[in-house]
Image (cartoon, rainbow, N blue to C red; front, side, top):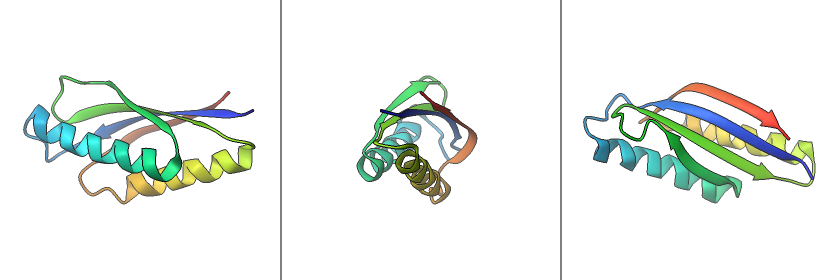
Length: 93
């Protein structure tokens, strides 16, 4: 059973406090979790206002399914106006 792990970093230019940053990160995490059926967690830069590291894991029946989930995740991130993706790494296990 294939698994894909995506590590991404976000730049949140409008965040002027940890509270405003976490609102954006929480929104991104919930959209990915609900639309991609993925396990998602904020994994880095918890004490930095304008940066966030998020890790996503998806299990699928085939690599084609995982590729479609990655494409959907990338579209969700590209459509997010509050955050910019500065790193997007994909690893198949």
